[in-house]
Length: 171
Image 1: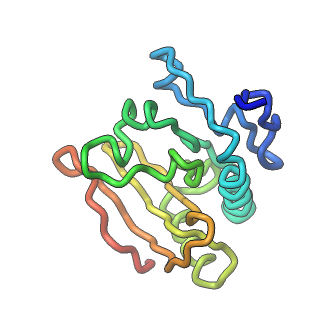
Image 2 (image 1 turned 180 degrees about the vertical axis):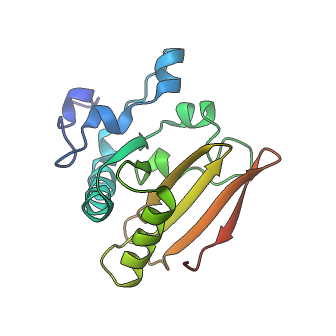
Image 3 (image 1 turned 135 degrees about the horizontal axis):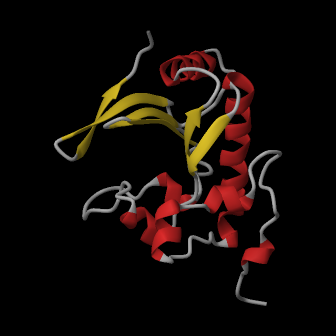
């Protein structure tokens, strides 16, 4: 039929993540901007949702801050790629999720996920413990399909309005 519709998406993209939760954006809702994902991104959505389910199994319930972001929403929230010359966020390809653990301190959850990756219990392309003022979250992402990668684990802190990334080697 040519054009895709939101109804082409299943209600849930994993056992506990709904399409509505995966595409929710407070900023988009406030500004009246849609944040619907193209159906072509469904394979990526299923992969990042599966990774999130593995994360939940390891650290318990989490609040899903962000998963899919349209390019417009990504610019509105100041995500990677919002400024000229920056690489566009993996959120725009439905390959990333920002999570906040609800059942343990975020630093403990981050370390547990890092150790799980080291012991091959968890397979992510990139994981970042991000801090912006008093806000903290874990960014986790899968690789583009078919890309060979070395997992990266980092810490990120906002300094003078810019996120500064440093490698993480564990506690």
